[in-house]
Length: 201
Image 1: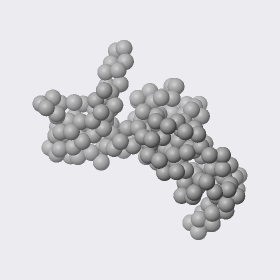
Image 2: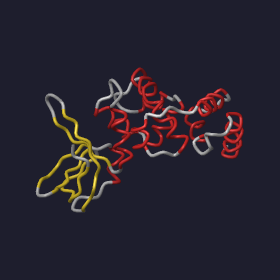
Image 3: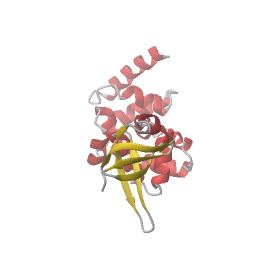
Image 4: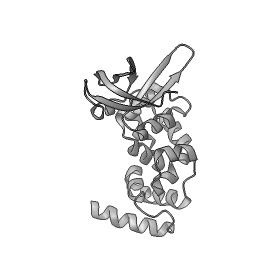
């Protein structure tokens, strides 16, 4: 497994980068959203990588930060989500927005990515909601979320559901609740979230 590459950028396109390390140029496919965060041609740069080995192919995928790499690995752990779909999702959504959408059960948010239909989007939310829920509530890094597989607290889930029933979108509800202490009673979480969301409107 190649964890990262640190070297001069030889070539760069919106969806790939070539980095020279020890005299060898490595091509890595990248999310389009990461292109701006990766150094220009001729500059020295570090990217975090994931190597995918299949029967007919060995491909390297690159990311500007560890969080994006961890999110890619989480997404591709879902049945039916291959590396191409994982890159498409990260091209369309930042990791924090992916976490918010999963926590809120907002599967429609994933259909903005090329090649991700409603059924696959629903599967992503279903298979990953337990992994990201607690991390969203407590500010755990994506790497920690991936390793822990921790379940979300019931209070957070209930609060999100309550806010959605009041007319807020799932993403709006999850974003507001992510800033509140998840150990508080459900009613208190809802009250604080409503106050914050009311000021924002």
